[in-house]
Length: 268
Image (cartoon, rainbow, N blue to C red; front, side, top):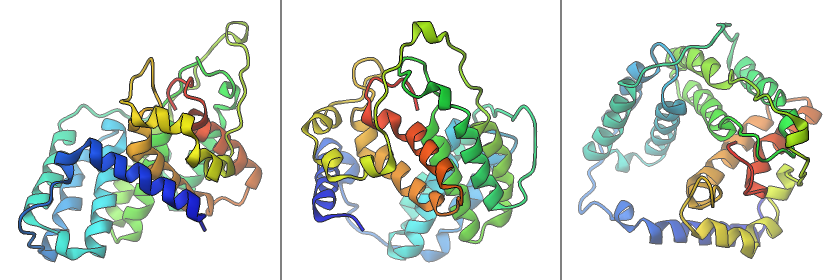
């Protein structure tokens, strides 16, 4: 359970998001939900997952989030919103897919989740080496949880197709580097650190989060705090309960969350 202080600080970040992107939060004059249209969104996902990885799994991520949300609030299944979601999947489907170097079918969703954790542990040598650029661990994690959710929503075949995409995503190679050129700068990045009152109330964090994202000067800008930090923590909490090896969970937490506590970390 989150403390009142953490909840209040998360609400503050959400208010800042709404303020910074007002046009995106302008309500439609009239909302007319049609629950029958919800299925159009996963249907539009099929070509976006066919044949390999596109756009870091974003089509899967948005489909999972939106279908679950509209099932919880069917009055939001407005034809205009559904059309925009389907169009987004259609745009991603036009991108060139990437295939995994080796294909190994997962036995089930549990095997897929374990494959994510096993893959992320490979990057332990990068801990404390912020200038060695990492692959996007954030989207690997949210992508995994999205496929798990799609299956739980009743789209098992679609999730199975997406597992080829998933293998291409988590199969990124570990960057090679010369340790002499990258001295250690270790920082604490446990899950409890990132869920603490101190982290969410930190004025240093707020200062970074209020400013636009910039790859060189502010990689922890509001790209992180206005969505990706919420999404990755939500997804990660749903996944960690499926992993029995708590030492592995602790290691993966450090690898995944290092960028959230150290703005100098490249990628992740």
